[in-house]
Length: 126
Image 1 (cartoon, rainbow, N blue to C red):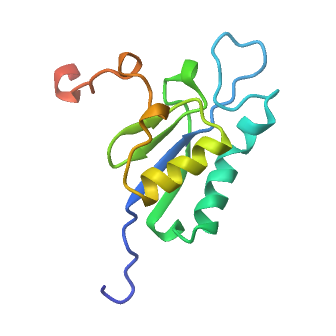
Image 2 (cartoon, one colour):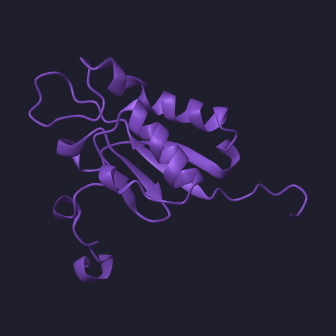
């Protein structure tokens, strides 16, 4: 490693932190009446620190990832893996099995019919 450089993380984890006001028709990944949903990002970051892998994994708070019905959600890159219906227990398994162990936790991945194929920016450009 070149002195003064910062190593590149192996993973980026984008955790949706969208919170709509009560009464909005669209669900949120962070709900005012659900304490656990409010704590998930902090829990994720703390677990990464406790495991000593924070230099290799960058957790990022993000806005809506457009999969509100399946929330709370997070996207793991590389691999374009979206995990849905998150809980603290699911985050523990995702860290241990996917991030450290290299195996996607398939049972927590968004169903294929809810995700679909990526859109091509070139096909949409005007």
